[in-house]
Image: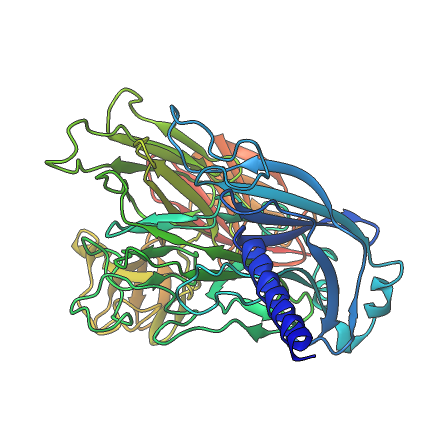
Length: 595
């Protein structure tokens, strides 16, 4: 009897061990995932899940797909199975040089080379049919989260989450979308493949390349914990690691992984993450480390009623990284340029972006030749090589903006540079933000004892002394939108916002108030007017501009004559300022009123 019990116990222990081994083996293929969605119309969305497989691991099956709803990250409205995912493609996205063989061959097969496969799964969901329609029109069910689940995370992870369950998700706020002008949402797409392998003691520059060219929502970025369960159960991290400090970076002194980051140092120190554009910069120093990094993208849009920014969606990218000790004596390419740009709408902006790559002497005898590409993140922009034959290259980004391109949130594009080293090639990805601001017009009113710029929101103000060759005024308020002259005289204001700049007419400040410096040579009639206004001048006019009282350009026309009729029927009723430009004299400003 004891022998039978002993045999049964041994058999049970063996089954438990085999089950654990199977789970560990199954887990060895999971490198990460990200999810996104796109609006198809009539309440339907396409959900896309991209799951990344380590090609040395077991094959990837179909992942579990579900959804839950609630508010503030909860699942208070329950969990449903909207449909099943269908695998639509398998692609080898391994970082290899052009002469190397693809490591994931044959695809989705155990034990091939060191590489990464991207498995794409898709499903169509409908908020007008069951089960998702149960979440609609309920204030307690605003946040609808779609998620995938797979057991388990890789046992090779060294920072704590080894063996934890794997979850990835994306969220759409169906209530806040209804508060915006556009009643739908498509999440950002990722234009940069995830990183899976990093080189030890080599700087790492990375950006997801999250891009929203459908809704043009504002995107913020955040490091978040990996999920071991929904709605928000974090994976386990082993001290000193956490989701904010996920790896061992280069620090001076090297007594802590939490040193103050400096992404511009050589090599970069600390773990640097930029929440405004998603840039990551670090120099990994522990050559056998396998960390986990999760980045959350949040989409913001203005409430059409209140003007406040509200969240309309979230998505996550989950990446397991492996630090490699041997990268064949190679250094990372460096991208140099102006990463934060402010330009004026209606202008053309160009900047040179340099890609350099230092030779790893004395080990590297043949210098690498770098190439770069951008993610076409700005419609109408161009990115071209100045000299394609050079080893280290310079590219030029140009964008001819249009009137109306100004918006509260910045545009963004990423540049990816590779040195084509064999093997693996070193890759650098950096984000560039472009803020487009409205055109400005320097208009001044007299609020005795002050001269006041109508545009009070410009980035900078500089009051000028017209009687002293337009030299800057030396006075306490001379760099403010409201200027108090210390002496009677003739003054103008120069205002700037990014690369937008304008200078007002000169005005004579005296005890009688504010008068124009020169005698008017322009006649306007009728004034007030209904749709059309006639302009007559003693000299040829080169340009006409009409501004509202907030300084916003409402009408513009280039001309070359002294008399004309303007059709201003599209203007709303109110008071405007008409600015008349001449070839050989200062512009004149006239007040016009539309009935």
